[in-house]
Length: 563
Ligand SMILES: *[C@@H]1O[C@H](CO)[C@@H](O)[C@H](O)[C@H]1NC(C)=O
Ligand SMILES: *[C@@H]1O[C@H](CO)[C@@H](O)[C@H](O)[C@H]1NC(C)=O
Ligand SMILES: *[C@@H]1O[C@H](CO)[C@@H](O)[C@H](O)[C@H]1NC(C)=O
Ligand SMILES: *[C@@H]1O[C@H](CO)[C@@H](O)[C@H](O)[C@H]1NC(C)=O
Ligand SMILES: *[C@@H]1O[C@H](CO)[C@@H](O)[C@H](O)[C@H]1NC(C)=O
Ligand SMILES: *[C@@H]1O[C@H](CO)[C@@H](O)[C@H](O)[C@H]1NC(C)=O
Ligand SMILES: *[C@@H]1O[C@H](CO)[C@@H](O)[C@H](O)[C@H]1NC(C)=O
Ligand SMILES: *[C@@H]1O[C@H](CO)[C@@H](O)[C@H](O)[C@H]1NC(C)=O
Ligand SMILES: *[C@@H]1O[C@H](CO)[C@@H](O)[C@H](O)[C@H]1NC(C)=O
Ligand SMILES: *[C@@H]1O[C@H](CO)[C@@H](O)[C@H](O)[C@H]1NC(C)=O
Ligand SMILES: CC(=O)N[C@H]1CO[C@H](CO)[C@@H](O)[C@@H]1O
Image (cartoon, rainbow, N blue to C red):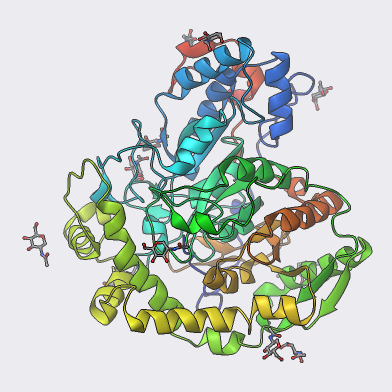
């Protein structure tokens, strides 16, 4: 839920060796007429095929399962496949035959991050062995919502362990339980995080889309790095019931998809009030807005869009992103929007040097994790709080301590140690709200009468995270093929040839309907996602599995890899 920013300056540059430039695998073209290509398949295409009986939900589960297994050894995006996925799909197929259609996601496979609990055979661990075998009393509200709309929960995706709230020297996409997830666009690509597996899985079509969670950047950043269209919803639009927390004030669950419209379908499925998460009582509408209908190509026309220039740093590595951002500004103007430049976040510098953002997360984690753990019905390791989890982590070798430290928890427990009803918490929280609000995003929106603000996605998460406002991101461009690789301390490629990046739209609380429209209009005018193909691609398509039925199961016999 918190993403680790690549430290551009601390990294030595490494010249690209030509051995990295492996050719992209040959893509099958046998999937044209009847079957959508699963790398780019949309909700509308899958719904149409299911409706016409061209393929079934069982076929989709078989195809996506094969794709997951094809790239498991290289990408490690999915840690577990739901052993019940085929039987659930068969039931949904029967229901459809019987005349019941639950909605556009009926029978469509979706992956969820491994911190969103399901009351089934799958684990919910946040990537830690401290929670292996732990069980919950019921599905999380997110899982229950997905099931009710007819989506098949196909599996759990890997994440930066504890949503990147453990260590100061770990890597994006690593967890003890799930190993190291990698991005698909370049050798050893840093997948970003913490919703790393959800991002990578969506980007190479291991399901229609995935759910991620964000505290500060953990949906937006992997969407940025993996060429996706995503929504980081307003805190309170989507319930955090039985989601392993960092911070009740900042956590949110959202869709990570390849297209804006798919993200809209998924958001519509998961948004809404939940008595088990009282932040959802702040939702200002009775009926969820029609996020799919908001996808209009003319949505930018007549809108006022601000640019908080003072948030953008200048550095050599950022030139491709900043250049693409300037082109985006021109394009948005052409689309009929008014650009208001220099709508700066006046409190940004003070905020950047403030301790308050860190204090809020540390203290919330100390407070909120025990609340999650207290709801477990089975808890084999018996961990009750952050202190227990630290102890477990430090003495369990597979957790890779001390190579990956527990610095975040040390800071929270030893440096602060108080809960979020303490006045010291309140002071930090109020400072965040003021600097990121009136002196930040909400101030800029009000002072310049803006509908939204745009930023390159790598600079978008921080301010909205502190005030719980929504952000939509869509693909913007790619680093050029001759880009010099910049590795992280653990050797992941954080900058490199063909690595994707995105554009973000930031708005007021509960303005998702507006932001989705803006994102969609931009996406449809640019369509940059498909201009670069991932290096690692599964090749199984529907044509390879249609009619195989439920007999295959996982680890089945797919012979399509050589095509
Ligand atoms: C598939 O690709 C081959 C080689 O590029 C081409 O000859 C053939 O016409 C294509 N088939 C279809 C159905 O597009
Ligand atoms: C991926 O590979 C690892 C290691 O071989 C294995 O433990 C894991 O179960 C695999 N994941 C899936 C989804 O099959
Ligand atoms: C089919 O519909 C009938 C009548 O609504 C219902 O009784 C039956 O359980 C349904 N079967 C399935 C597989 O959904
Ligand atoms: C939710 O409940 C907590 C604890 O009871 C309370 O502190 C908080 O103000 C409530 N939040 C909302 C949005 O109602
Ligand atoms: C906004 O920030 C930019 C970049 O730091 C700066 O050049 C500009 O003068 C600022 N504008 C206002 C109105 O503060
Ligand atoms: C850590 O766990 C060990 C083994 O359960 C226990 O003996 C020890 O007291 C624990 N230490 C702390 C500080 O909780
Ligand atoms: C991570 O930090 C710990 C504690 O400072 C240190 O022992 C370990 O060597 C570090 N690991 C790396 C890879 O830097
Ligand atoms: C909005 O205007 C108020 C009043 O002039 C000012 O204090 C604040 O800094 C402005 N905020 C932004 C982000 O422009
Ligand atoms: C990459 O190519 C572009 C255009 O050909 C050139 O301007 C740029 O200097 C090159 N960059 C590197 C790092 O070689
Ligand atoms: C599995 O694949 C092998 C090798 O292609 C083939 O001989 C065998 O018949 C297949 N088994 C099934 C159950 O399809
Ligand atoms: C559940 C799962 O996928 N576990 C694997 C995670 O990665 C480690 C290290 O690569 C493997 O050993 C696990 O089997």
